[in-house]
Image (cartoon, rainbow, N blue to C red):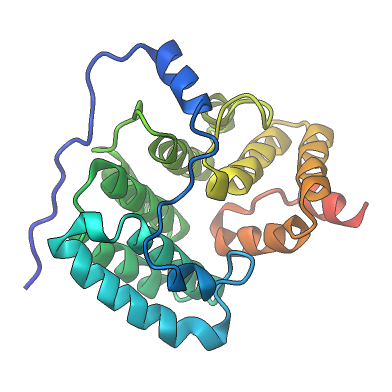
Length: 251
């Protein structure tokens, strides 16, 4: 039996945008709050190795069951584990399993931040599956002006994914800024936002700026050169940075 989906709005109402963004800048050092350190230990440079997948699935099942009855006890553990598993299966082209993981996690989540994170992940998954109507449906109840940085970044990223699919690259730049330091971004999604920004800049005709921004990410963290092709593969439908990514990696 499947429970009815909760499509209630996750926020709204008048917001002082300048004060909100100023508050988000002050949250840059806040990451995911993880209770079970084993969920972190099974990752290697934020990726889930194949040998750790059975453990991750077991932890995910346990965490999901606990989250359904006592969400405070698991903090952000379910988000972390679902992201790791979704990335693993997404890289292998198992799109139905990616959606199933997120939809099941949604049923076990309650807080506005968790619901927004998961709905935005489902929006992006629907975009990658070529179902823009479903993507818009997942995004519609989300709060475009949330008080926390994680929710803000997930919304900007999901919206940018949908706009990228529709060729609305000016709107992507508006959502993500025209440079990496234009807006605050949640740490684990910063690079992904950077790729969507660079893609939009490239497809507006400025390949040089797109290359420079990607190269700046690589210069900051050597593992970025490994992460960038993975991002392109998991978002294959959108053909991200077709010119700038090869140039950034090979120069």
